[in-house]
Length: 262
Image (cartoon, rainbow, N blue to C red; front, side):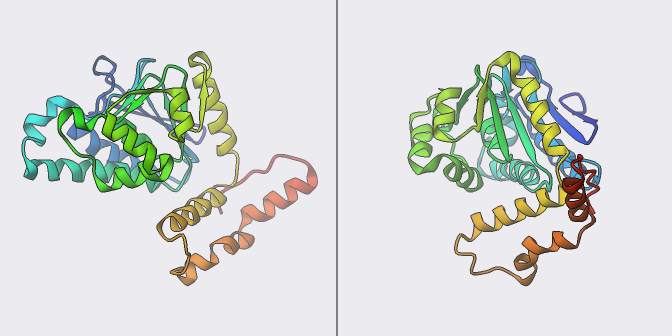
């Protein structure tokens, strides 16, 4: 599994690469377990400021679940529950990362690969991107968590279109639906994401962490009527941080701030 999912760290940016280009970077049952482990490892590292997820090569981010697994892990409803638990744990771990997450999507982003991308904060697509969740072609059904993420980004109408038609759409259509944030030429995609990740990594990590918590809370409870005292305090605690005072001084001194996450 160490070869199928490659983790690299450089200057505060971690890159997770799905490394099965001959299988369009399909992810097997063991791959979902490994992805969860990697995400939880990164969540515990103070020095990581941004996580980028991508696929090896230019042809695929990920074609989703490895269909070769089906006989062993999804042959009946009992097995499917175990498989779903591994998938949910992996995507939940990506969604729960306290730092910004970016998917660099080149080529196919299909099925479980597309559902995984929905768990990230941002999705940057190369112009050769192809998206879809053709579960109905295989006679399977996506889970509640995937449905929630899909509807949250694309809306119920577009979710119905993708699921009920089983069609594969291009990057421009995915942008129109809200599935991706930006579409860039394939040749420029890696440079674009690297620049974006670098810019994010240089910003205040405590601000990123709190913004992600507040956004998650709003999505869970748009009325905001169930805020705990700790959640109520989130917009204010940073004013007591070293990073806030560093940011203020740097602004007055017209220099780049050196945030420490404290």
